[in-house]
Amino acid sequence: MTSAPERQPAEPVDRPAESMTNRILPRRLRRLLARRTEAEDHSPAAEPQASDTPPLVAQILKSEGHADMAVVDLGREASEALRAQWSRSEPDKPFQSGGVMESAWLQTALGAGGTAASSLAAGNVFVATVNPATLMAIGQGVGSAVMGPGGQIVAQAPFVAAGSALLPVVAPVMLFTTISSLVIGRRLDRMQEGLGKLYGLVEEMKRFLEAEDYALFETVASQIESLRSDFTKQRRFAADAPSRLAMAERDVSKLRHKYRALMASRVGAATEARQVVSHLHRFHLATLYDLQVDALRLYWTLQKEPDFLAHRQARLQAKVERCVAEFRKILDTDPVGDYHRKMKSEASRTKWPWRLLTRSALDADERRLRRIRSDSHAIRARIWSEIESFESAAAESQDTSIVFYRESAGKGALRVFHTHEVQVQPSAA
Image 1 (cartoon, rainbow, N blue to C red):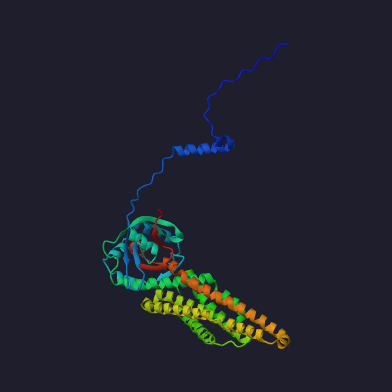
Image 2: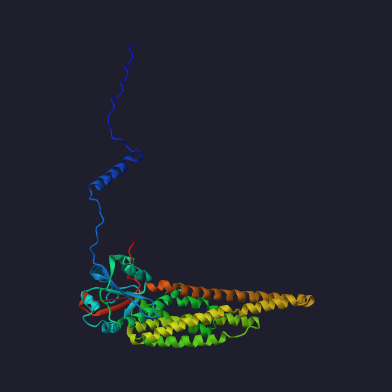
C-alpha cells in the first residue's frame, strides 16, 4: 500500500495587516466603516475660517443710582437673522416672553440723523440691557454671540466701542427707568412661576378661610389669572385692562389691610393661636396678590403710559421692600410658639394631684397646639423660602432686555419690546 502524498504547505500570501478592531467587528459593519473612512479621506479638510462679520457696535451708559447699561447695535447679519426668525411668528408677537412697549418716547429721544437713528433706518436691531455678561464682553472687547429666541446663536462677532454716542443724552434717562422696571417685574414673575397658579394657593389655604373670604380670594385670583393669561397669550393688554386692574386692586387692598391689622392679635388660648395662623395665611396670600397686580400694572404702564413709569416703578419698589420688611418682622416673632412654651411650662409646674385630674384635658390641649404649631411652621417656612427666592433672583432677572427696531427692514414704524429671549454674551472660547 502506498502512502498518500504529503500536503505541501501553502505559499504565503502578502495581505495587508488587519487591525484587532477589524478582526472583532462583524463583516457587514467593517464594510460600513470602510466606506465612511473612504468618504472622509476624499472630503476636503474643514479649516476654521476667519470671520469677516462686522463687529457689534456698543456703548456703556452710566447713571447714578442705577446699574450700568449696554446699548448694542447688532449689525446687519444678526439683525437679518433675527428678522427671519420673527417673520415665522405671529404678527405683532415676535417673542414668547415679555411684551410690547410704547415707542413714542424712544422715537422722540432718537431724533433724526443720529447714529442710532441711521442704523435703525438701515434695518439694524438694537438691544439695551444691564446683563452683566454683556457688559463684561463689551468691556473686554471679546467675541460675542447673539442669542435669539430658543437660545439659538444667530451671529458671532467681536465688540467695538461706539465712535460717537449711539443715543442722545436725553434717551438714557427713560431707558434706565425702563430697565429698572423690567428687572423688578422679572423678579416678581420668577417668584410667581415658582408659586404656580393662584387658584392652587387658594385651594391649599381653603381650610384657613371663612366662606366669605374664600369667595373673595377666589374672585381676585380669577381676575389676576385672567389678566395674566391675556397678556401672556398676546404679549399686550386689551383695552379693558385698566378697569379690570382697578377692580383687582380694590379687592386686594381690602384683604391686605384687614389681615395686616388682625396680625397684631395676641395669643392667650388655643383658639386665638388658630386665628393667628389663619390670619397669617390670609395676609400672606393677599400680599402675593397685591404684588402681582402691581407687576401687571407696571407692564400696562410700559405699554400705554410711559410718562407714569418712574412713579409706578418707584411705588412698586417701595412696596416690595415694605412687604419683605413686614414678612421678616413676622418671622422674627412667634406668638404661637411662645404660647405653646408657656402652656408646657405651666403644666410642668402643676402639682401632682391636680395634674392627674386634668391630664386628659392637658393632653388634648397639647395635641391641638402641636397641630396649630405645625401649620404655623409650614406657612412661616414658605414665607422664608419666598423671601430667599425673590432676593436670589436679583442677578438672574438682569437677563431681560429692551429690543427696538424699525419694521420693513428699517423703512417702517419703530417697534419696542421687552423680552429675555434676545441676549448678547461672550462667545465660547
